[in-house]
Image 1 (cartoon, rainbow, N blue to C red):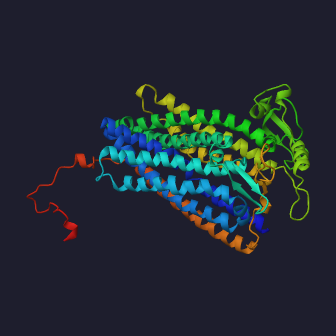
Image 2: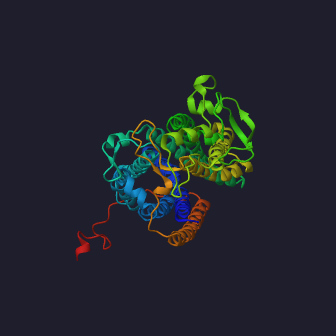
Length: 504
């Protein structure tokens, strides 16, 4: 492999590893905040127990997410220095905002929340976890702003003297229509992920406790785990509806800005009106589109996803061959070897990642339906299939998020910065021209192997810790550690702290 292929593999591996943790952190932090809010408002111990339980899982996930995410920023300068040189003036701004504002708030208040249970006022301590929840979502916004600019560059001009893109309007970058379609789609996807996570664990525990037939266990299932299931289902329903609505909006924007991505997602070789959405395709999914056969189709759905019309002239969806011809005529770029650029992304990758992204939501849908039925009217259940579906469903939205990003990034190829169809043509960059020119394939291969092994070990640590503490369940006893609940020390007691005793 050459340096380009290795650099792409390395970034893909580290990104997929990192994104295992991101959706859960973003989605679980507001759920933990809601649990603690319920405790502060009602004083009901069940919510404190759930806060402690899921808060611990959140902290483990957050720590691993931070560790795996740092490496990516270094890769921009190491493996992708030409890309960084070209877009650094624009791309670096939202990343700096994320680090200096959102992540600073997130990490600071998370520390206060961890160590402030017995030191901070209840409401102040509650405000800390809400600050974390808001900051995690703000981090997602700035990171998506950077990525959306790669999909649809705005707010910048091309400087022919430096050969770089230079920002001239930060407002345009932060109000990019691509960003405002991607952000709600990603956030609601994290709600779906966290809701499935909470519901799956709580469902497993509910069934386990009820099947013991012990009165105290059944009561624990009804008093603690059933409310957790309810909260998780609500998050799943909100997230699922949000994903569907925002995904529809995002698809139509994607069609306007990157028609080749939509055509590749359907493996549509020739443009047509009322293009059907294929559920299953067989044949050669190569860039030539030869011998492709769609077996199961939904008429007009592909056209609707892109154009908003099921039939008629307005529903016309160009095929990958049409896009190749149009892009070649407009840009006419050549590869480093002098060959014409193939403007069609990998069809097999885009076609199947798009369908796996959608299909993996099936686990969450089934879990939500089972939870709504089996826990109706205050019931708890010993249905072992509910526990099994709960566990099976947990990884599925994680995979859906990953496949969604694989589709987003692979569907943009061969561009690392896709041209804006209505903007300045010079602001575009082929992926092969963004790779570092001074880093040898051997160096990239070595670092890729090392990072893959390290990340694999971290993933094993994450799974072990999450499984261990999930199996432990909610704490059997908890107490209010807030200063308001603590008895003042006896002034006559020898054990009472003296003022400024640390200074003696």
